[in-house]
Amino acid sequence: MSETTGAAPAAQHSEAAPRLSRLLLTGAAGGLGKVLRERLQPMARVIRLSDVAEMAPAAGPHEEVAPCNLADKKAVDALVAGCDAIVHLGGVSVERPFEEILEANIRGVFHVYEAARRHGVKRIVFASSNHVIGFYKQSEHIDAHAARRPDGYYGLSKSFGEDMAQFYYDRYGIETVSIRIGSSFPEPANRRMMSTWLSYRDLTTLIEKSLFTPGVKHTVVYGASANRDVWWDNSAAAHLGFAPQDSSEVFRDKVEAQPPVAPTDPNAIYQGGAFTAQGPFGD
Image (cartoon, rainbow, N blue to C red; front, side, top):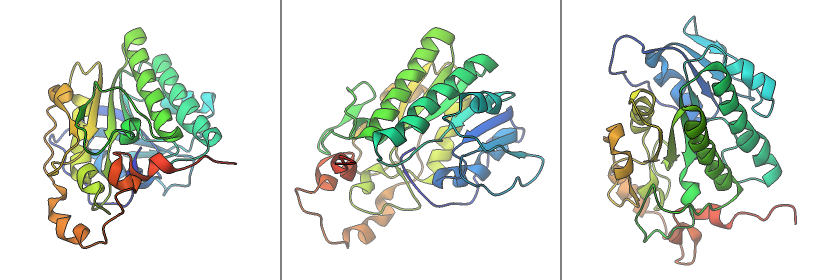
């Protein structure tokens, strides 16, 4: 997951009948998990919700609440059993010491893919992050084939997750869409987010396309709305048919009323913003 918070009303699914029997949503207690908990329900008869943190109880027969520590391989194996597809948001979602990132974001993503292999799950939507390429300058325009330039341990873990997705497709045929989420908040908080902002509606559409588009193999797609100043080229993911409907432009006057940041501030230089300057930890 990337920069996320808040909740929003559910979006309507494009078909009346769910196309999945059981969909697993990890990280369901997090900022985006709470948003997607309701929005994904039309896509499956049952949504299995999982997190290490406390969650609200199941709302009815269409929900299952299954707490799970992603670092526990046996627990993750049991969690995935009986699921048709996985939306994997779980893990540490901010820059932290490597030891903390290791358990949930690196061991955890391995456990999810191993469980998918064992239980025959053939589609995963992986919440990657713009922090996989965070050390590119904001003046640069890149696509999914650009070399990764992680901006911290968090970005490294998401880069590892993309490699895991590619490996499990090549070896076992498990298809993944890795969404390099920009900044999914109710509105952009600063000038940098005017380029990286992803509305909840556009995120929901992108996840739907990622779950149901046939033949995705391992696709990397940038998660951003139709913002005026875009750093990312999604032509390599055109087969998803993702056409964002929202734009940060409606917030421009509000954001530009803020005091400008110094030209030496990472938020004014790098696509990953402040993540490029966090740490080292424990010195």
